[in-house]
Length: 125
Image (tube, rainbow, N blue to C red; front, top):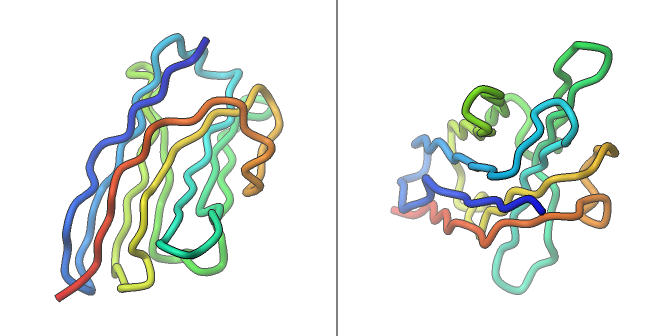
Protein backbone atom coordinates (compact mmCIF):
# COMPACT_ATOMS: atom_id res chain seq x y z
CA UNK A 1 0.00 0.00 0.00
CA UNK A 2 1.25 3.45 -0.91
CA UNK A 3 -0.21 6.63 0.58
CA UNK A 4 0.26 9.95 -1.19
CA UNK A 5 -0.31 13.41 0.30
CA UNK A 6 -0.12 16.61 -1.73
CA UNK A 7 0.68 20.04 -0.31
CA UNK A 8 1.68 23.50 -1.46
CA UNK A 9 -1.44 24.65 -3.26
CA UNK A 10 -2.92 28.08 -2.81
CA UNK A 11 -3.98 31.32 -4.42
CA UNK A 12 -1.45 33.08 -6.63
CA UNK A 13 -1.59 35.93 -9.11
CA UNK A 14 -0.94 35.35 -12.81
CA UNK A 15 2.79 35.19 -13.43
CA UNK A 16 3.46 33.91 -9.95
CA UNK A 17 4.93 30.63 -8.74
CA UNK A 18 3.99 27.73 -6.51
CA UNK A 19 5.80 24.58 -5.50
CA UNK A 20 3.70 21.51 -4.93
CA UNK A 21 4.95 18.55 -2.95
CA UNK A 22 3.85 14.94 -2.99
CA UNK A 23 4.87 12.95 0.07
CA UNK A 24 4.71 9.20 -0.16
CA UNK A 25 4.66 6.68 2.65
CA UNK A 26 5.57 3.11 1.91
CA UNK A 27 7.73 4.54 -0.87
CA UNK A 28 10.23 2.49 -2.82
CA UNK A 29 12.10 5.22 -4.64
CA UNK A 30 13.24 3.44 -7.74
CA UNK A 31 10.13 1.39 -8.31
CA UNK A 32 7.38 3.91 -8.76
CA UNK A 33 6.78 6.44 -11.48
CA UNK A 34 5.07 9.54 -10.11
CA UNK A 35 2.74 11.72 -12.11
CA UNK A 36 1.04 15.04 -11.50
CA UNK A 37 -2.47 15.56 -12.81
CA UNK A 38 -4.96 18.39 -12.57
CA UNK A 39 -8.67 18.85 -12.96
CA UNK A 40 -10.42 22.15 -13.48
CA UNK A 41 -14.14 22.58 -12.76
CA UNK A 42 -16.20 21.13 -15.58
CA UNK A 43 -13.17 19.71 -17.36
CA UNK A 44 -11.61 16.30 -17.64
CA UNK A 45 -8.53 15.35 -15.67
CA UNK A 46 -5.32 16.31 -17.47
CA UNK A 47 -1.87 14.83 -17.11
CA UNK A 48 0.68 17.54 -16.33
CA UNK A 49 4.02 15.84 -15.77
CA UNK A 50 5.61 12.57 -14.72
CA UNK A 51 8.97 11.34 -13.49
CA UNK A 52 10.45 7.87 -13.53
CA UNK A 53 13.74 6.07 -13.19
CA UNK A 54 15.16 3.88 -15.91
CA UNK A 55 18.60 2.25 -16.05
CA UNK A 56 19.81 4.55 -13.31
CA UNK A 57 18.61 7.70 -15.06
CA UNK A 58 15.83 10.02 -13.97
CA UNK A 59 13.44 10.84 -16.79
CA UNK A 60 10.73 13.46 -17.00
CA UNK A 61 7.88 14.28 -19.33
CA UNK A 62 5.59 17.30 -19.57
CA UNK A 63 2.32 18.20 -21.19
CA UNK A 64 2.76 20.79 -23.93
CA UNK A 65 0.64 23.23 -21.95
CA UNK A 66 3.19 23.43 -19.12
CA UNK A 67 6.47 22.72 -20.90
CA UNK A 68 9.05 25.36 -20.06
CA UNK A 69 7.06 26.62 -17.05
CA UNK A 70 6.78 23.59 -14.77
CA UNK A 71 9.58 21.40 -13.44
CA UNK A 72 9.13 18.03 -11.78
CA UNK A 73 11.78 16.63 -9.46
CA UNK A 74 12.13 13.99 -6.78
CA UNK A 75 14.00 13.54 -3.52
CA UNK A 76 14.30 9.82 -3.00
CA UNK A 77 15.74 10.20 0.49
CA UNK A 78 12.61 12.05 1.58
CA UNK A 79 10.20 10.00 -0.50
CA UNK A 80 8.93 13.19 -2.12
CA UNK A 81 8.21 14.50 -5.58
CA UNK A 82 7.90 18.19 -6.32
CA UNK A 83 6.26 20.25 -9.03
CA UNK A 84 7.71 23.73 -9.38
CA UNK A 85 5.21 25.87 -11.24
CA UNK A 86 6.36 29.20 -12.66
CA UNK A 87 4.69 31.81 -14.85
CA UNK A 88 1.31 30.58 -13.72
CA UNK A 89 -1.73 31.36 -15.82
CA UNK A 90 -5.43 31.42 -14.91
CA UNK A 91 -5.88 28.28 -17.01
CA UNK A 92 -3.55 26.44 -14.61
CA UNK A 93 -6.28 26.65 -11.97
CA UNK A 94 -7.54 23.32 -10.69
CA UNK A 95 -7.10 20.56 -8.19
CA UNK A 96 -3.66 19.01 -8.55
CA UNK A 97 -3.19 15.34 -7.76
CA UNK A 98 -0.11 13.21 -7.57
CA UNK A 99 -0.30 9.56 -8.48
CA UNK A 100 2.03 6.57 -8.40
CA UNK A 101 2.45 3.81 -10.92
CA UNK A 102 3.99 0.41 -10.35
CA UNK A 103 6.38 0.69 -13.25
CA UNK A 104 4.66 2.17 -16.28
CA UNK A 105 4.74 5.90 -16.88
CA UNK A 106 2.99 8.51 -18.95
CA UNK A 107 0.31 11.18 -18.72
CA UNK A 108 -2.68 8.88 -18.85
CA UNK A 109 -4.34 8.60 -15.48
CA UNK A 110 -5.35 5.00 -16.08
CA UNK A 111 -1.69 3.99 -15.82
CA UNK A 112 -1.56 4.94 -12.16
CA UNK A 113 -2.60 2.82 -9.22
CA UNK A 114 -2.37 5.14 -6.22
CA UNK A 115 -3.73 8.68 -5.89
CA UNK A 116 -3.55 11.46 -3.36
CA UNK A 117 -6.47 13.61 -2.25
CA UNK A 118 -5.37 16.67 -4.21
CA UNK A 119 -4.43 20.26 -3.48
CA UNK A 120 -6.21 23.32 -4.87
CA UNK A 121 -4.31 25.75 -7.06
CA UNK A 122 -6.04 28.99 -7.98
CA UNK A 123 -4.43 31.52 -10.32
CA UNK A 124 -6.35 34.77 -10.20
CA UNK A 125 -5.97 38.50 -9.62
